[in-house]
Length: 397
Image (cartoon, helix red, strand yellow):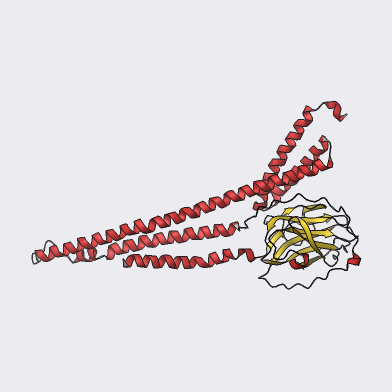
């Protein structure tokens, strides 16, 4: 039984070694949450209603691409997310460049359940220079909310030159904020907001999204498998050592040799009985170990594997849902414009080219979403071309 106690102590020590890993994973939500960084990140989507290019290559603040925006007054960017909590964040920050002339005035809006709550202006953009802007979530009405659905960066002034945006993120509360306070411009400086500034986006789904950092999950699963392997090695090591150091081995070594005629037969028989008893005890302990400990370790490894497969399945389903939603949005926009069949075909061809470029340039997690959307758009393009072939030629004359 002392052997089993030692084994349990080793198992507890191994779990204590894993505790810092679990602590880091549980605190993953307190890190800065990237919205745009060489592409849309962490479940955010581009729902903007201004002319923009999220793969602009010059100028850039960091990485390989930025967002270029050519907007009219009260047009801009909308970084949308399914309803999520902002409890762990205190501000939104981004870098902006005014381009050749600069002097654009931007307004940051907070969105709850797809509707604007409050807005806050930032100082005018500098020409040909990057500058960071930081706005408190409380100033735009989305602090400590559970139905946060993204932010808007809107052109609020009369200067409509092309400007650039990069490195957009939600800043965590646990990190110090070393940015200066941003004073909103006077309402007198702003032109009146038109009654119909933009078409309302479709009502987002209210299904909550579990923000699970995939890399942390695989890190934890890998650590668990390593610890299980080390425990199995320790079990094998102690089991072999106990067989070597058991009283049976010692007793057998002390048995008198058959060739010596001075040994007492009764004493030799007594030593043999002791050796057999010790060997039987060691075998019983090994059997107890296999029956009690190994099934638990096997079940633990099985659960870890199932959890990993379940996470992969959820990620695949979420990617497919996002691709279908992006396709529905594109179809809704084309339907609202009431374009002829040939114009719709050209629009789908243009979108296919954009998605192929995204697949080549984006990171792996963004590339999978682009691939899924590309497949849907290509299928829709083939359907439109088939419709064109079925229609009489005189219709296009």
